[in-house]
Length: 304
Ligand code: ATP
Image 1 (cartoon, rainbow, N blue to C red):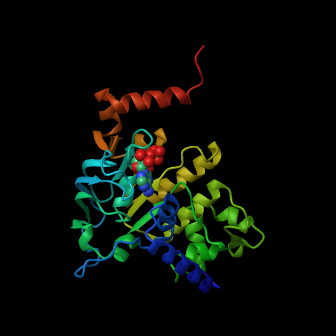
Image 2: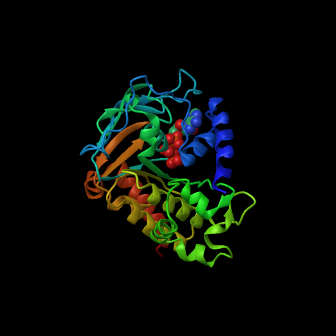
Image 3: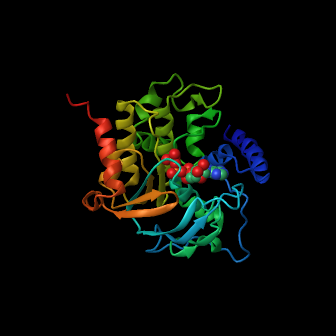
């Protein structure tokens, strides 16, 4: 039955080969870990294992989307940072600042217009893309599920996973009980025309998928408001666990995510304007401090 997935993936690959840059396909290829239309260099190699695995660096990276006006401001403008293996890094800033775009350049879904993106110490252009993409897990705002069983959706991340592994991943992602309550358990068919999962349930399936994949680098593109408070808490607990022991790049909208980050990058109009820990940035009294105050005020009941 798992074979059913492959014709579907083939179709998507064809669509991707048309070089569409629509947001829809950008999202689909991030979920399915498909290769975008960037080809490997002849001497491209696998991501090296070793102490640098998990380091992510941007060195004066500028980027303009292929379909953007050539005289417009670049989406990313000379962005430089290093995230050390195992660190939790959060990107914050106003909508449209370029945070999600940063996360697209790490797995080389798009190529930097200038500057260098390095993964495990190596220029991503020198790495085989299958190897690169295989070491990055993405949990995003919109989770794409195949019209297939939950087990098949999970095994997409690890085809050889045993039932016990699926169950362990589902437990760690706080979705096991929910799945067990479905009429057909892990055989319940989801996705389009299938059993309808809530946003929070889909996200937890996505987290279980990432746990099965067990990548050294995790990208979390946080939902803004899709979840109610209870399922947000459940999802957050699962994400916190998933982030343990790996480099995590969080595109953060929630205060709770950033407060404990090892480093926070504040992005405004394609540039990193401030960087540091939560307390350092509060003390700085700049953009972060005012964003934080705004959100904290919004979260509190109005004072009489
Ligand atoms: P948000 O917090 O709203 O998610 P963001 O900081 O993540 O915003 P990005 O999604 O990185 O911002 O978008 C940065 C800019 O690039 C925006 O102006 C956006 O319209 C533009 N952009 C995003 N995707 C594409 C695309 N595929 N083609 C052209 N422009 C794009």
